[in-house]
Image (cartoon, rainbow, N blue to C red):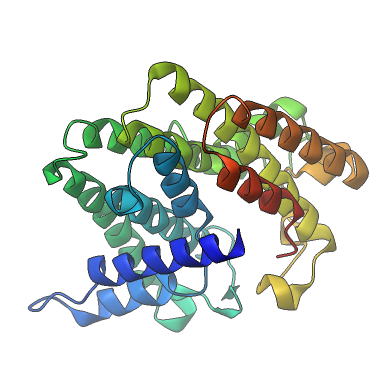
Length: 292
């Protein structure tokens, strides 16, 4: 699994370098800021999910790369904007100064904007590929829904609105199901849709994505309370200190761990109904058992 992950990450990074190459005649600073954040050492979990789902449905990794790279661009843009003073006000991301600290706030905002728009330019480039021209639009639609007001951005808004308020399970599930889970679900589903999977198979992948997205966020909340700042590359316990809704705050650490493993078990049960998903199964284990 480690060898496959390394190969898929390298494949994604090589493609991202091409997509984000400086364009002559345009300000170099914006490309430097985009590249700085994209190549800051991310785990590439979302593009790998997309690539594995596409492969499980019969599409080559190469043909799935536009969607995979688009997902990483969107994820990175969201991190750049999350780190801004108006949002989480973080100085470190992955052990390095955040984009607005390395450059400035205006450049960071524009770098995020540029990555978001570049993501859809990249995803839609699959419409000219003979193997994906019939499915690329539907895959891009899944990514758009996962990233926008009905998905990740909506979850972020709800997270801000609920700061300091009474913690409820309903709000917790909405925030984390959208803030984190929606883009993870879109990663899996877009790969399957791009490969032309049947509606029944897409439904299974969607359910898998929803469960593993929540499990990932629970693991993230647990690490924020118990992790090592050097390994995490950022300041910990900020969310709980700011009165944000987290799984340990609502359920406690031990019950949060149990919930994460229950979701992992259910997600792997779903994969048992789909052929060629051993890699996704191993990746799901990594989601919950990671240390950073």
